[in-house]
Length: 303
Image 1 (cartoon, rainbow, N blue to C red):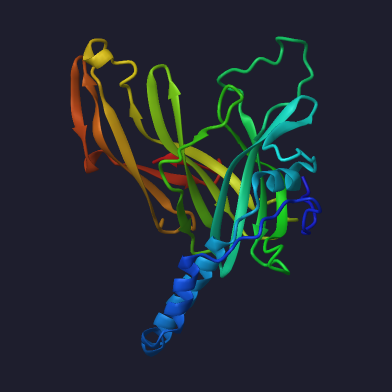
Image 2 (image 1 turned 60 degrees about the horizontal axis):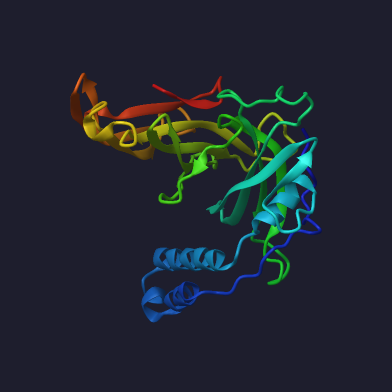
């Protein structure tokens, strides 16, 4: 599917931000005698800190702006509305990042199937996923009033979720980033959920390839799988009367993969797991799980 031209959405409500104290402090630090005397490397670090602080101080496009850029429907400020034949689109997550010296912001949305069946024929099940879409902007606007310039969008970058719902964002944890040798960005978005008495957490994984948007063979953004990193059965174990109560969490780390551009992912758990009837055991570094990128399947898989 071809993407739209790289112009600014005519009705996107892009926000103008104000410089914060962080930006001001970075500017002062970059111009201070200590920074100037510290050498080129220190001055470069100070300049990069200034640029990052400036980008953070400018409010990114809001949910209605992202929605309009993708669906070309004025939702009158809403972040969820019908887009076609009963399909509902909803804003999911936004992420600002730097790559190759350019500041980007991407807003992700999800949308449900279009409805064509009779009542009861479109029921959702565990295999019913939602479609992911995205709109990306760069901090290269022509004026302070319009700092973000629309770069492009994609109507589909993958399918995920279940029961026609997406994976829920876990706001307690921060997204994780990895920049590949070839200049791609791998993004891990923290997610959470609950099923059959057990809460769980993990990450939804995406890759951003800055290549031209008219090359359909290589998407700009792509969903590349989800990884479970932890769970807690406290809602089902009844204080140990039904089953042992266990809880584990996992730390996700990236590392270069020899012979490949996409990184290796390791999840190192801590906490406890059920080891047998009425038994639990402690988890540690020996229980770490490694995932590698499968070029054929275009997703991460356990090694």
